[in-house]
Image 1 (cartoon, one colour):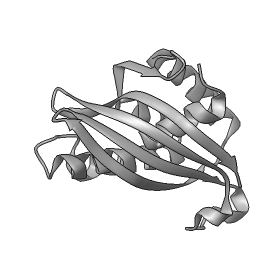
Image 2 (tube, rainbow, N blue to C red; image 1 turned 60 degrees about the horizontal axis):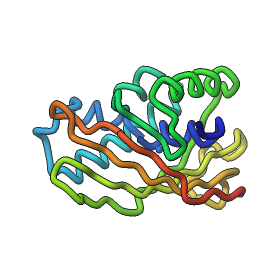
Image 3 (cartoon, rainbow, N blue to C red; image 1 turned 30 degrees about the horizontal axis):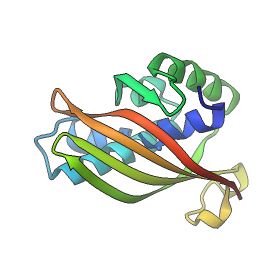
Length: 158
């Protein structure tokens, strides 16, 4: 299982979902596949900032696994703890690339920064306390894009 901070970033991205759900209604019939995937990422960011555990997890597949073998239930427990210990969450999210190796599989590279309370309104990564690059894989399951895999190739402190 990943360290707590890294688990949090997965949910942040996969680190931006609530907004997309509002925009697309969670349905794949609207927009291009890339637009749908980007919307899921955006919704995850909003759900994380709202500390909405169920809002984040509704976009994580039951078959989710991270690069260390942690599953969806592990993610849920880590997020629950993170939300208890962090009453305020502010994030910056940038989608660096979206690729489709298969029609029903998207690979997304995302950069996520966490902001401290003083910089909560900031829009530049230079104010971030942690910056993580995350690689997510989303699979089309029952007409919805769900996160099935996550990896963190690099992390740096701001």
